[in-house]
Image (cartoon, rainbow, N blue to C red):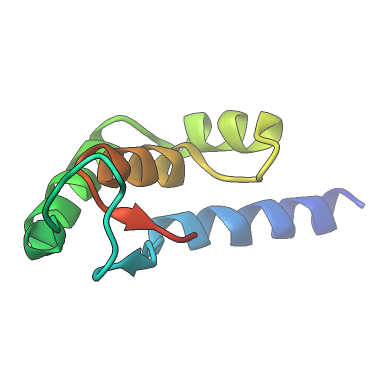
Length: 91
């Protein structure tokens, strides 16, 4: 049982390192009059750096264990960062 739990946890955390948000580039978040999709590459780079700097293996496990959506801290930071920059994130 411990091995199965460990394997599932390890796989989900490995997935967090390769999180790629699904961005609706033609849509708007509703808070801006113009599309912000032109900045998606730059914003993604900045958000990845912020997420890496503010999460680690232990914080990802702790955050994942209490998250109702089973997100890691890295995914949560990345998603919130892109949304706050005006991008429509679908996942």
